[in-house]
Image 1 (cartoon, rainbow over the protein chains, first blue to last red):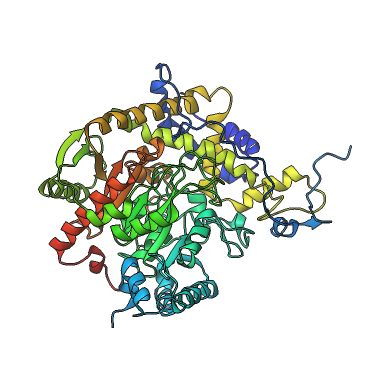
Image 2 (cartoon, each protein chain N blue to C red):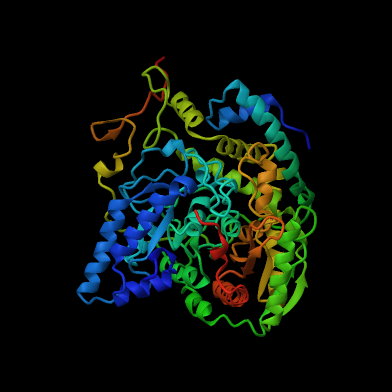
Length: 98
Length: 497
């Protein structure tokens, strides 16, 4: 399988919401290339007719009764907020201004 | 009079119940020990002196009123800093959670409190439990009490070091790929990864949700069993929690009879990369099991050689998704919010500043494995390997009751030796990962010191899911026979701090 390039790492960093510094890009590109080279051996089984396992327990749709229960107060829920206003989380702008 | 810090958890609870010590005296002795030695060891990120003493006083008051106390009432414990504790800092070893005071207790924290266990504080760990040496903690490494220049294992190095340094008789760890068992092996202590789903994950910071499992750490097999019983059991707040009775782990630990048990030695866990002294002590432990009346055979698990590769695709993939919650909006660090930057820019700047190198590597590795064009080749194939490993276990457990192997291929390596070589670091989890991928129960317990470096070697025992009691049966038998042979518990050979 092909190795990973510095440009690909920059793309992954953007997807991962990591504002990496230039020197980190160089460092991680080398390391990720080695790691991906090593883990690529799983593709030996890519063509085998084996069902995938995503979880050790055969559970599906664990449901509970839809009942009102005690929960965090607004004060508790906001206790770790970096910024707050009028009993709400205050966040930087999400949509552009124009 | 005996020094309370040298007692086992079972002895401590008995001493408190009989009035030999008060819970406050026991707690104060441990707080003094932490004060005296933790500057060298660095096991704790936060010591909750007030909270611990309040909990101890409550136990003493209950005893004075004549109330029945549980089997661990008044026993101090070191809690891995991955479980939320209401009003007590919970960092998960990361700068992104520095100063966060959770508004709620994890289910595990609650169960400890209900059992009268005294939580002394929160222990150091690799950031978000990603690592095998505790060197990935944003708050500095923990040292191995056997040799302060060496790693204590990871990610739960703080919890295991606290036990080995007699800072607490009990500790809690979490095990995603070996983070309870490998530190236990490195420090000459006992650590158990229960069956997946046995211990609630509610309030445990998520790393890889299909693999993460909390579990007990202790200096003896019986103490681990008592703690296992206190923390396990169904929790409606965790949808993957198993709704089944907890296996009879304490009974098995008190019994410790392995006569007639069928024990399989995993053939694949040997050869290149395995330290000679580790294999020597492991071989002796296998001989011992045979002497104790077990039937030992060799078992082959051919897909195990792909377990490490599958793990380093599955765990980072799940982590890349789980750690998306650290977006600087609702709790934790926020960097660069200057009223001009967008939320997305603030998120990216915060994650850059708040995450360490290993966490960034794994987030990007997971993002890569899940991205279109690579998904089938990487993540999809890793899931197939997971099926093949589960089948290997099923075939093996049709022939034997438990499997045994070394816990880790080497003894504790020097601090700094593998920090720039992620792949070399990952190899420390070679033997522990298959049990996580299949959801089985597994234990590590000490089986001696490697002759070449005098450092502890761990024996790993793996049992089928829901048969956790078999671990304790085997562990108790080996522990009793070896303690008898040595004339004392292994930890007494550790140098004074």
